[in-house]
Length: 336
Ligand code: TYM
Picture (cartoon, rainbow, N blue to C red):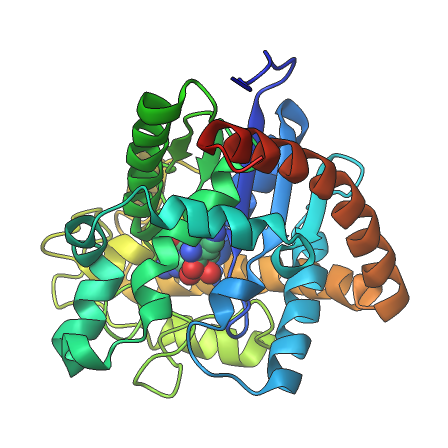
């Protein structure tokens, strides 16, 4: 039986779906946490382009989104010297392993995933694409192929990492200690950045308010400032972290805390005697400063030759590990 060999280093992995521009939520919930820890682990980050085709897309748009995602990773501080950066569809084992993992799960488990429930509540189950339904099996494959220990994600993806653990345990129980069981890393602050116009909803790549509730890493300073200054607050006039009664203000406090590293308590006391205008202005300053730095680096890295070289190196390095793990799983199943 082909089992895992002991590892020298713990492995960290995450990915973003290139289904539009990267948001401040993606950055604060996942990419920043990954970038901060990348030197501590054997690190892999990928562009989850197979996940982006769960809905039909214009091919040219998808290609552009893949390049943008790649350049944004670099602009956000992902360092190819410390992290293997690759495109999911470059590694055939994701498809094979995704198929294998689909058999380690049950209809009931997949039906309980929030993303599927939300889509089927909106339009009825029969109209939901199969891709969205089996998507967690592909995500499990992404994680398990690299013997991952830690997966930095936002709160919305934690459920998928939990299901990955279940699939992994089931596989190992049936076929031996073949796959490594991962843990999600969900940061205590910033794991669910909310829509600025509707703080009862998560900040998503698209929203119903002409994207005024979503900050994109590519937003210009004027538009980003406007989005923050017009963010929904409340009539209480208190800069206080109270997610139940003041979701909009609490969201802005989380954003400021993540960007500046100040604690929530320090932010509350700093703005204790000040109104929302001064507070929002400080949040807008921090966001604009962050975006300016990211965009400066983005311009530097957004060169097709540079991106292609990094991706081809990432592909070679990721492929080696993915091939080994997939072979181990196939051997355990009797397929090799
Ligand atoms: P995606 O592309 O929707 O989001 C990428 C990452 O950003 C986090 N995120 C947020 N965090 C805080 N607040 C928000 N408003 C917010 N919006 C998004 C997500 O939780 C995620 O961590 N299925 C994944 C991509 C994926 C993946 C993987 C991730 C595919 N395979 C394996 C980790 C490991 C997705 O669609 O993320």
